[in-house]
Image (cartoon, rainbow over all chains, first blue to last red; front, side, top):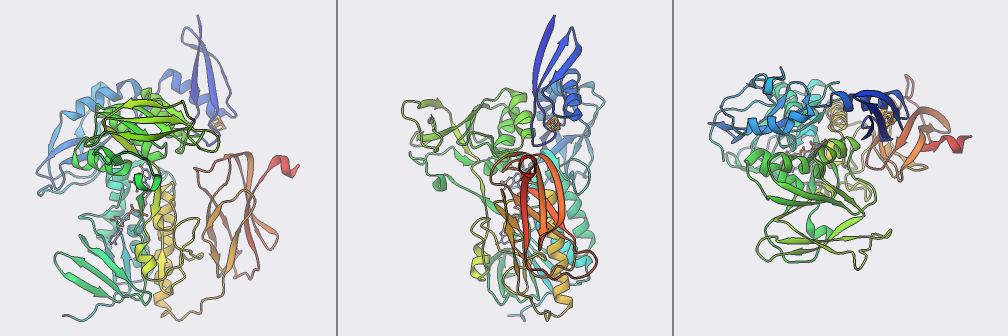
Length: 125
Length: 424
Ligand SMILES: Cc1cc2nc3c(=O)[nH]c(=O)nc-3n(C[C@H](O)[C@H](O)[C@H](O)COP(=O)(O)OP(=O)(O)OC[C@H]3O[C@@H](n4cnc5c(N)ncnc54)[C@H](O)[C@@H]3O)c2cc1C
Ligand code: SF4
C-alpha cells in the first residue's frame, strides 16, 4: 500500500516541506525539496531517524547536584524517551572528568553516554 | 587599603564572550589579564544549555553548551589568566575605574588600561510584555526554568504553557516533556515561529507538542499559584480577537519572549548605546564610544549562534591588546557609519574607523525573502557577495569585507540584500 509522510527540512532557512511517498517501506519519491540535501534528509527521517540525547544525572559529593550528559553519537529517535528515563535513575560520584563514560552502550545501541563537562568534588548549594 | 591595581585588561563576565576575549588578549601579548565573574564558576549561560547545537562553525563539530564552555575554560586555566569568581562589578566609570565586590576581597577598585564588556543579556519579563492578572507563583522565564531543571534539579511545573517560540522556549518545551511534565502547547503572537526550524522539528514535532501561531496569553488566573491562562488569537495587528478566548488549565507559564543586552554598567560609563540592538555602538575593532572600553558577545546584540559570540570576542580581545600595547595613544579616526541598506534592519559593527584589515559584519533582515543575495558595497564597489535560498529575521546573517592588503580610505559602506527578481 502506498503511504505518504511529511517532514520539514532543517538544513537551511528555506525549511522546505517535504512529502515522501513509500510502498511497503520502499521509498518511491520525495517531493517539495528545493535541493538534494532535502531529498536525502527525508529518506533518512523515514528509514532511520536519529537524535542526540542530552539530559542530566544526579551527582553525589559534587559542587552541583546534577551533571549534564550527552550521547557520544545520535541514537534511534524512538529510543530517546527511554534513554532519558534510564538515565534518570543514575547517580555518579564527583569528581567527574569531561567526556567520562557515565553509561556505556545505552539500550544496546552501542552508543555511550558521556559527561559533557568537568565537575569537581565539593558541597552543592 | 591597598593600592588600586592597574591590570592591562579587565574582562567583565565569563561566558563564552568573556572567556574568548580574555584568551585573545592574553595571546595577543598582554601578561596581566583579569577576568571578573559574578557566578561561582566560569561559562556564563552555557552550563545550563545542556542540549547540543553549539560550535558547528568554530569547532566544526556539534557540541552541548557545557562542552563548548569547557573547551574555553580549559584554555583559560592553562593560559594563566587571573580569574575572580563570585565577583560582581558594581560600577564602571568612563575613565575606566571599576568598583567590584566579592566575599574574599570585599569592595575593591581597579584602574585597568583597557576593559572588555562581556556581560551577556537578561530575559525580558512578564512586566515588559504586560500580561494582566495576579502575580502568582509559577510564572517563570524560560532561562530561569532551564536553570532550575538543568542545574538545580527542580521542576517548576507539571502542566506547562509556553509563551513565545524563540529557541529557548522550544528547547524548554522538549526538556519539560522529557522530564515528565505535560507541555500543553507553545503560543506565539507572530504568524511564524521565532526560533530555528531545527528546533521546531526536533523539540516540538518530535514530541507532538502543538505550536499555536498568532496566539497570545491575555490573562493569568490564580492568586497564589497559576491555575490557568487565557489564550487568545490575534489579528494581523497583533490585537487579541474577541470571542476567541480559551482557558487552559496549567500550573506554570513559561515566558520565552526575548533577551535584552545587559548594559547597566555601560550606561554608567557613558557608553553610547544603539536603540536597535540595545547594546553599545561598536566599530570594526569592537571598540565602544568610550576610549579603551571594548565589548563583545550578547552584551552588544543578541547573537543566535555562540560561534559568532566567540568571533566577536576574539576580535575585542585582540583589539584591547593592540590598544594597550600602543599605549592608548593611537588617534581614533572619525568613523564612517555602516549603512543598513535594502532589507537590512541593523548591522554590527555600526561604525568603521579603519579599513585596514578584513572585517566581519553581522546583520538581521527586516522581512523574509527567497532567492536573496547579500552584498557589501564600499564606495559603490562590491567587495562581498553571497547567495542564500532564504533569509529570515530570526536568523542573523554574516557578511564581510576585505580591504585587500593595505589600508583603504572610504566614504561609504553599505550592507544590503537584493533578490534575483530585482536584479533581473
Ligand atoms: C537564559 C538564556 C538561555 C540561552 N539558551 C541558549 C541556547 O539554548 N542555545 C543557544 O545557542 N544560545 C542560547 N542562549 C544565547 C547564549 O546566551 C549565547 O549563545 C551566549 O551564551 C552568549 O555569551 P555571552 O558570553 O555574551 O553571555 P553569557 O553567557 O550570558 O555570559 C555573561 C556573563 O557575564 C556575567 N556578568 C554579567 N554582569 C556582570 C557583572 N556586573 N559583574 C560580573 N559578571 C557579570 C554573567 O554572570 C555571565 O556569566 C541563551 C541565552 C540566555 C540568556
Ligand atoms: S531541501 Fe534544500 S533548500 Fe530546502 S530546506 Fe532543505 S537544504 Fe534548504
